[in-house]
Image (tube, rainbow, N blue to C red; front, side):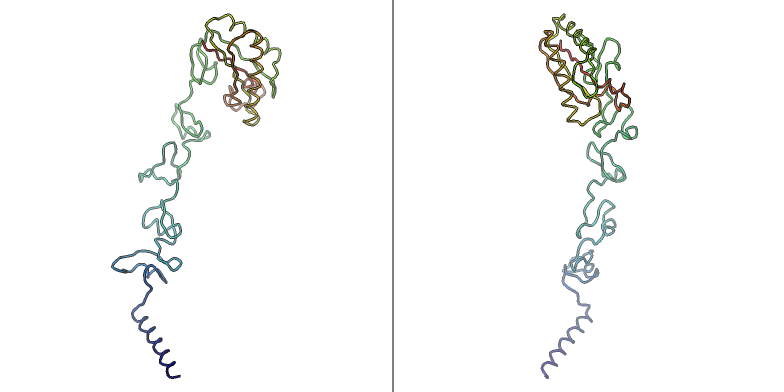
Length: 266
């Protein structure tokens, strides 16, 4: 019994000595923040106690005060926010992106193109690009036509467009007359090397469906040209990607987009 009393007395004495000398755990173990802000092993630490371990931070404020607002606390470590930007501080976005509310995002949006892009640009695929010279032949001066969004000299033979009914690839009577006139023009010229028929759709329907419908339309026109002896004819589809009237709402506007174009190569 006497030995037990002596042992307990030694333990109590040790605790009192430890308290008197401000005993603390060895870094990086900790009980509280003060265990992480004193000099330990000849090194000065300014850290915080997190889950009994000294860490660089415990919340976002610890990082913003140490570094800047672009850093947040992630599992005890200060890490820069993904996509953070601040042009005033020299923290810029990658090429093709724009800084909004200190976050990098797409360079432009169609609905805010006037704010995002220059006056001579449009927003295409969320990038600011130069305005196209034209979208249809009507945008070009006399004697020129629109090809790949540029006004170019009219080809040796300038075929007219053939139009289609909604969700149809059948050649209607007026389109048949147009195609026959185009075939006569093409056959009368010896300087026509090839013709490409491009099928287009209005903007209703899925992308996949419109691509398939546009190809059926182009193939139908090609068959007529083949019957009239036009050589070197190919067919492709652009679906609804190149509307004459973008954002069409009326049936007459949709009709202008349901068409077959004839691209003539001299």
